[in-house]
Length: 242
Length: 276
Ligand SMILES: Nc1ncnc2c1ncn2[C@@H]1O[C@H](COP(=O)(O)OP(=O)(O)OP(=O)(O)O)[C@@H](O)[C@H]1O
Ligand SMILES: [Mg+2]
Image (cartoon, rainbow over all chains, first blue to last red; front, side, top):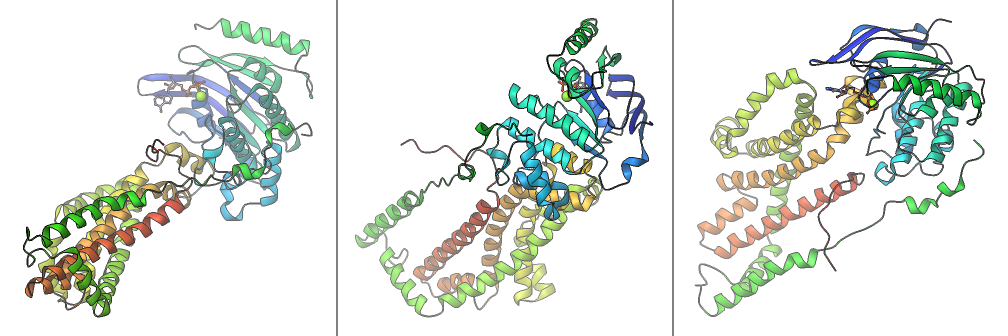
């Protein structure tokens, strides 16, 4: 299967600081890939490039033409911060792309999915950090994207909600056949969710190791295979100059 | 997801915005009342000559007398001019301010000229306006429009420039066009600035209407002022001044009310509350 989204030899600098050097990755249909790496290593930067939000880089970004066809809007992004429009309520934020013509049924369904049923009327200032992040996830899913780019979407929620959201994302990804590129610095999360884990490291960052997780879904968080893979990932992380 | 936790759900009523209103209105009246009382005493005891400074009680009588006659038509005339001039001036300012805010190139072309024009005191336009447009309504409305344009324009540009880049990025990612970005993100986000500008612009409009009417008018609150001076009646002048204060306050309160309603979403510091 040809990749939906691929990055070839990406090199990115801010002024004289080179953040990414020769990073390549490809996201196949229905695949969940995690990007793991220490804070400040350029994960968000890479995601912004993949989302087409940052065009000042060297290398190539290749979008499969499939992304531009069909009913869905191609790529959905959930940023590291919720980035909700403060003047719109929760429901309006979720259906933001369609404005007044938003599909109310779908919005209600998404509200249910992220555990915010009945909160459609609340304003962002009335939400906790984790709730706001869940609204942002619902907004990312609203356009029924084929590729979902998630930037540490679960970092602001409690462990319990986090597990629910992780399952939600995998469920929805399977249900709507969404490919996911997930940025995280949580090892458990990366291994539990992904088909592949890419570990960024070095100065400037490159992909230092790639880990396949050939465990069928639904997965058991306590599975020994996952623990084993986590150990390998840890080794890879420790080998970095940090 | 069937195992959704119920503990997260709370009755919807708890999520409606809390109505917390602090009313300070009576406190605001203390100072004016004290000054008026003092004046009354001063004038009655003869410390201040009554032909220079009428007692507040005289003012009430004058007010009463005027209210039975021409006062309302004066107020109406001035209000109409203010409203029309303000609408034109602020409308243009919102349009141009948004465009200049959105585009650095447009800013490079237009902004220096606007800044230069802004440096010209509004009253300096009066002679030119009189020559070009005559002494009728058009010149007055134009002066008011010029006066209210700049505060609104300045704030609109600042408002658009202060929109959080991260919010704009959300729109960009969703594939919004420039126009859509402007409507859906820039304008709502700039609303707090816009209202500051509108309120400044409105007070400029009242300032300009008086200036225009002082110079050439047969009607309006400014005319009442000139009339009072010509017939040497400070009570007329003062009544006109008080009317101006009231009208200014009234229209500003109206705008403030709209602002409060439209910016309910705002999550910002609203001043320290009183200690009980
Ligand atoms: N707009 C910018 N201008 C200059 N430097 C930047 C900018 N954005 C990011 N950087 C730099 O690029 C590097 C990578 O930033 P990035 O946000 O991608 O990190 P990250 O891996 O997402 O970190 P975290 O896990 O903390 O979110 C950092 O060193 C940061 O200082
Ligand atoms: Mg980041």
